[in-house]
Amino acid sequence: MRFDEAYSGNVFIKSHPTFEDSQAVIYGMPMDWTVSYRPGSRFGPARIREVSIGLEEYSAYLDRELDEVKYFDAGDIPLPFGNPHKSLEIIEEFVDRVLDAGKFPLGLGGEHLVSWPVMKAMYKKYPDLAIIHMDAHTDLREDYEGEPLSHSTPIRKVCDLIGPENVYSFGIRSGMKEEFEWAKKVGMHISKFDVHKPLLEVLPKLSGRPVYVTIDIDVLDPAHAPGTGTVDAGGITSRELLASIHSIAESNVKVVGCDLVEVAPIYDPSEQTANTASKLIREMLLGWVK
Image 1 (cartoon, rainbow, N blue to C red):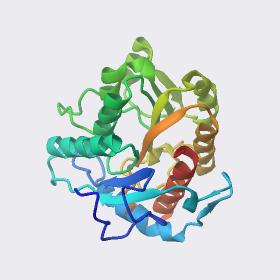
Image 2: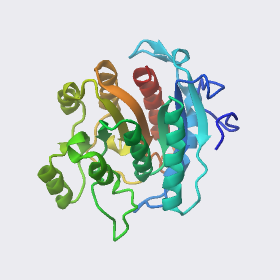
Image 3: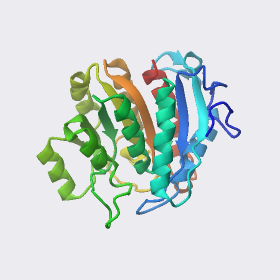
Image 4: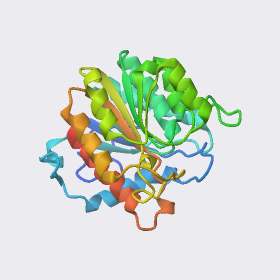
């Protein structure tokens, strides 16, 4: 995928025309090859871009406008349909190039497994990396029905890579008993059900560290985000998620990259989920790209 060519389709609102002059790069990872319930998140990145035209360019929360951040929408990474192994390799290589160019990567998923190669690339550049993970699900399985490349495994994989003590999960309300027991045994931080309050307690501990933030849209209650592959009742509100994004922005944490995954537009004819995701992306850009 070339960076010297503008994306020919829809781009996120106010996308900068060139890669070279950008501070951040938005890119899509249109993969849902391993989902165990409802597919369709491969269409998420495109729809998030399309609905962004309805966004205000000004954030009343952060008192900033999108013109204040230069970001380039590189479009969706071309991925071989049905081939997770090759797809993950391509994603990692892409993010390596973004980081080598000194840009802030902001990924749009796609199923949550796409975050795994991104976090691998981030760890190569930032060996003291910490992960903030917001999700309904633990994603701590070693495999799903014998398959290690699964959307239920990315957080376990990154725990094994960087050490579970460097991974902080919030909003978790679903997972196997064994996953919760493993996390407790190895010293991984899991906050059940809530995000903002426990996040505020953790952020001072991460002061000055490079942090990658991965957000699964299903951390929101289905009332706020029905368009996702594995809906799970009892989630947080969009207001709490926005407050969490802003608290990270106001902290001394150094966010070095992020992603938002698991938007599956087909299950939400109201487009509430895609529009919410688009607003979240705006706040992430304005709050985290320095």
